[in-house]
Amino acid sequence: MESDASVPFARFAALSGRVAGERGRNAKIARLADFLGSLRGRDVLVGASYCAGELPQGKVGVGYATIRAIASDAPPPPALGTLSLRELDQEIEALAALEGAGSAKRRKEILTGLLARATAQERDVLLALLVSELRQGALASLMLEAVAQLVGAPPARVRRAAMLAGSEVLAAHVALTEGALALERFVLTPFTPVLPMLASPCADPGEALEIHGEALFELKLDGARIQAHREGEVVRVWSRAMNEVTERVPEVVAAVRAMPATRAILDGEAIALRDDGSPAPFQVSMQRFGRTRGVEDKARSLPLTPFFFDVLLVDDTVLLDAPLSLRRAELVRLVGEGGLARVPRSVRTRDADEAERLYAEVVAAGHEGLVAKSLEGLYEAGHRGSAWLKIKPAHTLDLVVLAVERGSGRRTGTLSNIHLGARDPSANGGFAMVGKTFKGMTDAMLAWQTRRFAELARDPAMLADPSAWSLALRPEQVVEVALNGVQVSSEYASGVALRFARVRRYRDDKRAEDASTIDEVRALLPR
Image 1 (cartoon, rainbow, N blue to C red):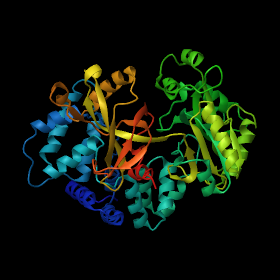
Image 2: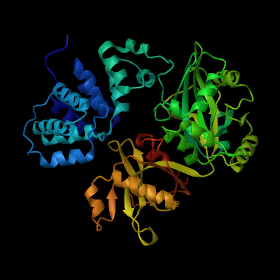
Image 3: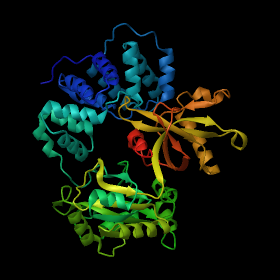
Image 4: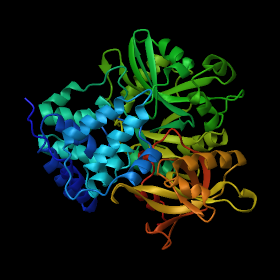
């Protein structure tokens, strides 16, 4: 039976501040574990959600403009807050349910009432939660570590359950309320997407062979990552960001439905090909994923070709814990040795010269590069390890746009020069600035980013102030930049700066938490 007592929200607000101030990972975990271990009933789910930087209700229709307007009109904060976790959760539940006529007025009433009961510290944390911008250097990943500590389970087991559940909070709630053994209920099953396995950067094929000894070198396609699930005649497809895109990719559905299996989960990419078989630019392929109308017409004028490079489930056989060599054998059986739906170029070798020749061939053909895969490697979804190594001809990083400057000269009237940040897990979950660039931007890109960054401005009022040369942005837009290298620099607090950075493309398929880390940037420093 749930206890009548609920933890004060002030406890979480104080915890968030203390965790943000801790430098050590273990100290952060200890504080989170102490808090989570004290929760009971509904507070467990709410507290785990807040520790992960999210609301149990997800998005609740409250934007920055609403927050600013209500916060500016709020009375001075009280010295002592009176909100409990349960009361706050109930009010946000009501907020999320609002729709139709009068909802804006009611939304304001609820938020005004909450702020009137919250101290200054509680207000800051509450508003950050509402707009998904809680920064404490310990969100979902360390929350799961704390849960593992509390229930006496290996952290990898809790992470795996979260991956298979599709939710860190759900896995945490189950572990904390039912025990570690209850995590066994989360298994790989069709129509529950899992986080995709990621590849780490690698300099060249020779370095990959030094790591793996023998490797499978596969073509690195510059398309849209897809995950396809089949159960009988039903096929559903998800994007890299775990958004369902089934209705937008009929070619993928048809390809999976034609395979000799009644159940399957496959990992791959969908890409638009030119008439000569060479890959179209990434942005061209992504046009198909923004379409919700006229899909059939667009599929005829811009067809996508699915290429699968891994399989996680075939009929009743779960392959997550099988080595790549076995997963690949199953994939070949499904699509055929020469099947169009399998990555077309691959070489299994120990010979660096052979791998270098393949690398040169695929780059000359217009492809992005190679992925070197360990034949003994397991599929570790959501984990960027050494089992997969991506090899590209130039260094590229996925960074977050932190600010933008007004254009001058020919670019007057645009938002042009962008400030680039790398994800810094040790710096309160924030981003470390590593450079600026205005290079590589086409006129179309400038027009697009001017609109986009106006939407992301932390203070929209500054858009109308011509003296505001630089505009701080919410750290949400990921951009892929090419660079010639990295150098030590005192210009930025990170201690490093990019050399000759230029924009390749904006990555709407990636989230800020998927961006390159500051350690990945520093790894490119000359040795």
